[in-house]
Length: 131
Image 1 (cartoon, helix red, strand yellow):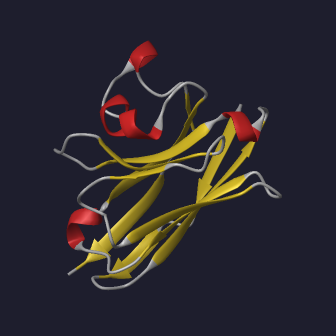
Image 2 (cartoon, one colour; image 1 turned 45 degrees about the horizontal axis):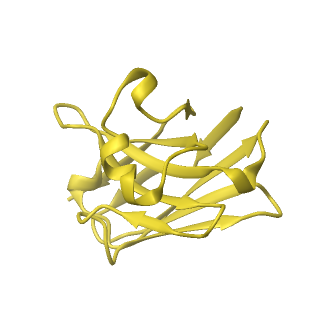
């Protein structure tokens, strides 16, 4: 399983970024793909996820109305469009995948470590939002 995240960068508050998670090595349609973020001194947070099996999505309250997740089966890629970015969105964003996680459970699962957390992780991409 490989997850390659890209699209991070430096943006001013109010700006937008689009993160991409290119995947390979597994049956894309069977997995839930999720983005979680980790900022220094803050708890890990499950930001958003999408089930490629049924299309259900999850958004953390902190990003609802600003972030949109989507999935392109032709490219085995998941996107996270982030609008109206705030300094509090500054973090390393990780793309993760798990065959057995329902979107409704992602917010909790994303905070767990080891075998109880998401099964597969990619390297993170840094998002920095300046005020």
